[in-house]
Length: 194
Image (cartoon, rainbow, N blue to C red; front, side, top):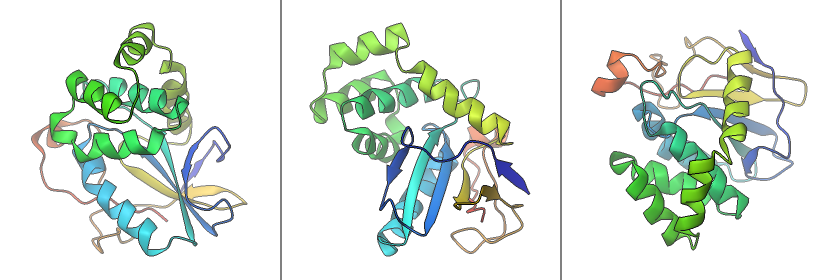
């Protein structure tokens, strides 16, 4: 069992009621195909349990395998600074097959954000420290692939082995580690590690 080292705080991106009895923390990569597959499942679970569940997203870009992951994460942070994190988050995952700077700039425009401000933020690395902090928190907690999802409690946040059933009911419970299978898009199911 791995214990997540970084507790949920007001600096996290949180969707759902503050007093929800269950918090799901996801470490994700916007270019990871398994994160893309997990995204609608997480949303469906959240919609099914709107008062019982809150979802926290933390960045874990596997940049060596996913060349657009870092820019996507920084773009989501840019949007978050303007109160549009979740819209950008959903927009990136819903258009993952087109991920690249043109998509990120188009989404910024769709959400009423300045493309030139986004360009400047990406060029200067303005939001890179937040993305890096999320990533390093994941590394400290033993995250080594995406998506990793863990249930947070008031006592501690923990994840268990992937032998538990996934959201889809499979015991496969695999994550992307940036290896060859990830790049080939081999079918896998995202695990909900509780």
